[in-house]
Amino acid sequence: MSRTLTEKLLDRAATGETIAGSQWREVRPDLVLGHDATIALIVDRIARHGHPLANPERLFLVADHFAPPSTVDRANILRRFLDFVEGSGLLEAGGTLEMMQGICHQVLVESPRCVPGSVIVGADSHTTMAGALGTFATGLGSTDILAVLLTGRTWLAVPPSIRVDCEGGLPPWLRGKDLALWLLGQHGEAGARGAALEFHGSGVPMDGRLTLCNMAVELGASSGVWVPDAITRAWCSARGPDGWPAELSLHDLQPDPDAEYLARHSLQLDTLAPQLAAPYSPANVHPVTELVGEKVHQVFIGSCAGGRLEELGDAARLLAGHRVPPLLKLVVTPSSTAVYKAALKRGYIETLLDAGAVVTNPSCGACGGIDKGLVAAGEVCLSTSNRNFRGRMGDKDARVFLGSGLVAAATALTGRITDPREVLA
Amino acid sequence: MSRLLPGPRTTPLAPVVGRAMVFGDHINTDLLHPSYFFSLDANTVQKGFLGAVEGREQAASETRARVLLAGENFGCGSSRETTMQALRLAGVQALVAVGFGRIFFRNALCLGLVAFTCPEAASLAEDGARVEVDPIARVARNLDTGRSVALDPLDPFWQEVLEAGGMMPWLAARGSLP
Image (cartoon, rainbow over all chains, first blue to last red):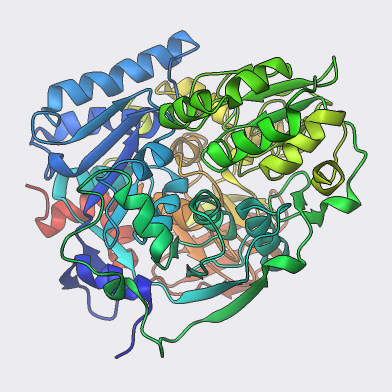
């Protein structure tokens, strides 16, 4: 029987257990991703069960939300999480803790522990991002994760796939974010609900793939997987000698040619304009040309969807030698320490500081309304993050637009929503 | 803390009867429970219920709804389980929607709430109407008008989880917990 890539990945991790008539199957995840906020919610319940973690060596935990904490309540949440890590013995057992090294999704894909071909579950909705490396990666709530920690198993349905073919190459004004927003504009917030997205195309670089797979969940998808190719292989190999699984070839990670899809979408990359999502939905998408001129009070470059080297580089390139308008707040939060260091080395950070940016430490930061860069009632923010829901990034009467790093940088130059094609020329 | 968590079901799954609160499409978890109410403290979590749903901030404490009826994609967005805890603390026992966000739906059933899809969920009742949701007969009724609608069947796996009282009780009953 021919299979999609998602079916192949889930078959690899299935235990064979199921329930008569059920679409759900028991699966043994290769890796479990967690962070301070959502793991802290279940620490008491883990202790109450009083038995050891099923597979501590499969845990990849990151302190990234309250990192470092900005309120007493959050300091106590982080402490609860760290006490659990220490008391559980998971580090001695081969599990991982990354202490404030960036956002868990970014830190994960930078690690050789994120292995193509694997199944990853995470206590955060944007766990889908790891699919960019050819994994099945999906988010779960804390009780679901509690079950995984105690049993080493979870229950997943094998979703049908929607195939997305990215045709051609990206023109200089387009990024992965534009493609994600275009899909959202076309298909809506439930456009891939109950399905997995399967992305094809060698014309999108890894940073853009990460953004697309990250925002698969904004379309309601269980997961988004980028079919591995030379770009995947190069990314993985750059992480070290163990960056690619020895037993797998690229061929093993392709869908069957006659696999069945729920739907097929095709993106002609060179025909799209830069896209923006207007308040209060990531699916309220317009070409940037319809929104140019709107005054903004803040530009935020950060989050797991938009604080990578691509966005920092684009911003540095457009802002070099300029100063942002005096009343504009430009907040830059690199997605990880590795991104931050690479940006420092390339001079991006100095350029952004010279342009008037404030650079905060790698963390979730303003995106989830956590700290450093929240927006006030009546303010307008152009953000490279993934969600512009009412109240998510600050006051519920603030308005957030989502766009690429290029749109963010062009907008930071002028203080008004600006088409990057006007600046790039 | 213990108020945040459900115990195993001690009585058979019974119909939920109570006032309804009705929502539109794509009501996300940031609206239902803004992230600044994320906490390990039950009082803080409870305060955030419907914290950013326009026009609902007051209604939340007044209606004492037991049943939330919603349109498409209810609970899309974040996985934060504090959202579901806030619903439980507010007394909500059943969710019926045209469609659910995937993680939110799992969170509801994992924590022992009744959750079903139904194409007519959003038009069954007005805010404040008395409704009944029967998870065994798979029917939702507007007790004020007498109208009843069929609920979509849950997958057999999730029906088992629901009847057990949530994911942890289901695992315990199955002997899967060490």
